[in-house]
Length: 258
Image (tube, rainbow, N blue to C red; front, side, top):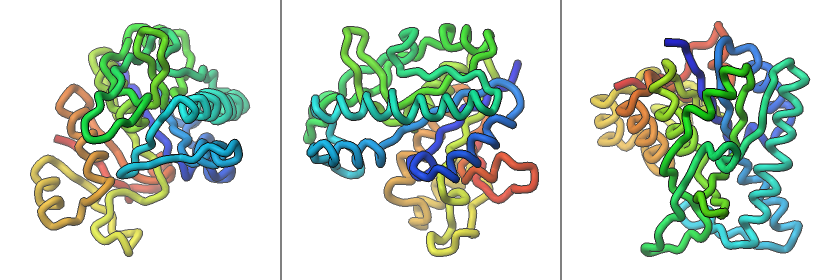
């Protein structure tokens, strides 16, 4: 099976021009087939406030009303996505920018209202892996933003980590897939105040221990749960760290396996 790398970049990389440029150079050097996934939440919050639209967050999740969805579509699907695609073309990577609505690649259901009404937020239902594969086979590099659709004409704001893991699971029937979650930290940390205290390997047994010791807490729990969900459904490995994990010299990042 051919290898496929699926890389998700966090908002802090997107926000910083220098970090973005150095990441994209490393991304362009990755051998073999690859897919990039990005959000853009910080940029969306900034532009929404310029337009006089207040951003509402609950437990770190954005409430997406109709006005906010318009801003997210403009920022994620337009400003951020096309900026990344243009920079990749300059690095000789034939990138194609996509939402989940393009080529019907990612369909979602609107999240049902329980205690909280998240508005136009999608939970991924299916990934059109064969359609995405046609782009890869044609030597295009897909760049997905964090927007999906419901199949009935409605766009939905969707968590970029989830998009990454569901694309990876969908593509794992066709490729040997590895996921890279790339953000500003070196990896999962043993001690949050010591940036070099990276937990290099996590499997299902050590994950239970890290949870019990409260080393993995808060927002990192859904991220790691997402990783194990992908691993249980065909993905080979998940890596978490900063962009230097794409260099030969660096082995100071977290790798998760079953």
